[in-house]
Length: 187
Image (cartoon, rainbow, N blue to C red; front, side, top):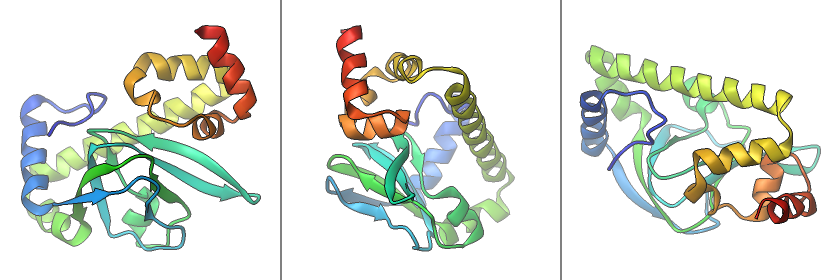
């Protein structure tokens, strides 16, 4: 098991974190189209994607809006609901048959509270996540949908190919037809 290389861990830090997760986590198989997190649910777990991919989406003005994806090596959960213990406002769905390593919050906190290394690594993970969200926000304000799509293809070509057209279009904030034209133009 490895983490997404976009995470900013030194090799020994990653090994320590993965060893902990393998110790306290439980492997779970998720079928394509299964919803692992449902809006309104309390979320007391996070997971690492071992294989497959997921999408997070929210309902906005009666429309499903894709807000992100997770792939092999990524951590995933509904962060706000996980941290604050409140019902989540999003859903997370498997886009294909997937395998994950689920870590329960109460198990993780046992190690977090007594091990400063775990605390430091968690801080790094959260700061990396905040940086990714900030970068995404800036990209959405400055770049066109086509430019954002090209950047995604550049950063994660294999992963981007796993995402169905309608979800990619939703993520980019454009119609399926417009994304089809962009794909045709760049091919």
